[in-house]
Length: 120
Image 1 (tube, rainbow, N blue to C red):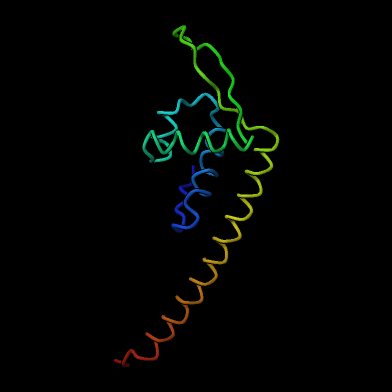
Image 2 (image 1 turned 180 degrees about the vertical axis):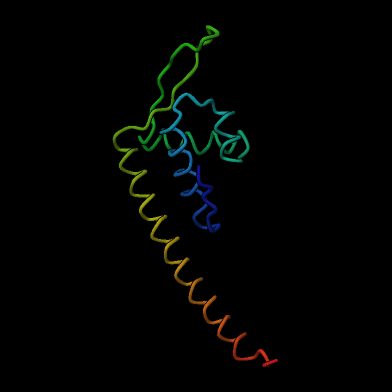
């Protein structure tokens, strides 16, 4: 899973996208497992998950695990799948723009170094 390291203003959106990506792959993740995978506290993970539930992007289904304990599956809804794709496209566009800007800055710095490096 790609780590989505967002700018602070995009942190909630990036967390929601990463949570949706993880849940699409592994809907049986517990909140604790999701918390570890996201690198967030359990409380923040609960907040992110419930925001997705409140927006209708994720739904909960009960199931039994092998150890006979009731557990939950967090499934992306059709609306959640569309939102995940929209957020992924927007994230990719931002990262491509950042990459282009960084590539230009690197080229300028290399040119500056070349101009100011004395010939041996």
